[in-house]
Image (cartoon, rainbow, N blue to C red):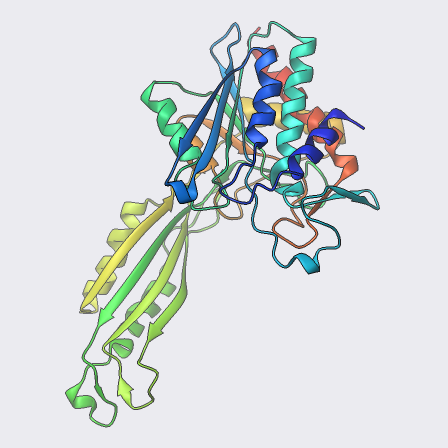
Length: 383
C-alpha cells in the first residue's frame, strides 16, 4: 500500500464531522515536525462549536512560500442505512476507495502531505519555504477556521506567495480542471412593509407583494456587468419569498425576500448594494434591507503558480488543464487576502457530499506526484 493511500485511509477513519477534527491535525503535525516544520494549533469559536486549525511552516533558504491548504472536517453522513459500507471505515470496491471525506478532501491532504515528505527527502535544503494551513471549519459556518488563521498571519505580517487549496476540482479525469478563482457572494434579506387588511377591502390596505414585484422584476432583468475572460457575468437570484398569514382573505403586512449575487471581479459589493438600493428607492418601497458579504471574488491569472501546476499535471497525466472560476465559494477567498496567487486543485468531484463518497484509488499516486512536481518546479524558480 502506498504511503499516500495509507494516510488517506487513516484520515477517513477519523469521524471528523464539522467542526470536529478528531485528531486528524495531530496525525499531520506528527509527520511534519520531524521534517523541520513548526506547528501551531489555533483553537477558535465557542465551546459548543470549537474549531481546530493547524498552521505548519518550514523555512527554506528563500522566504518565498508555497502553502497547501485544506480542511479535515467533513459534512454529515446522511442516513447510514443508505451507505453501502460504514462511511468512517475506508473500504475498497472495484478500484474505488469509499468513505466520507474521500473526495472532499482527505485524499488531497494525504497526497500533499506525502508529496512534501518525498520532496524534502530528495531535497533536504530547498530554497522554497513550505506551509500547510488546515482547518476543521470549512464545511460549517467558516467563521473560525481559515479566516482566523489568515487574520493571525496578517497581524504578524506573515505573507504567502503561492497557495494550492486541495478542493476536488477535477471533473471527468484527474487534472482536467484547476480553479484559478471564485466569484464573490453577497446576500440580502429584503423586508417590504405594507398595510395588512381584508382582501375584500384593498383600499384600506397596501399589498407589499404587489409593490415589491416591479422592483424585483427590474433587479432580475438588470445587467450588472458582462464578466470577463475568467468570470461569467454577475448574477442576481431570489432564493426565498415569504408573505401572508396563511389565510386566503388577508392582505399581508410584509413580504420578506432572500436573494444573492454571485459576482465577478468586474463588480464590487459596494457597487451592487448601492445599485440595488437605488432601484428599491426609485420604486418608492417602504423597506428594510440587511446585507451579508459571504466572500470577495478572487482571481489568479496565469503565471508562476498556474504554470507550475499545469506543467506538473501535463507531465504526469498528459491532460491539458482547463482554468475555471465556476462553482461556489471556498477558503481561497480568505487566503487570497494574504497571498497573491491562489488556485484549487484536487481529485474528481462527482461524489462529494453524496452517499458512498469515493475516489479512484488509481488517482491517488498521480495526485501526490502532481503536488510534488509543483513543489519541485517552484523550488527551481528560486535557484
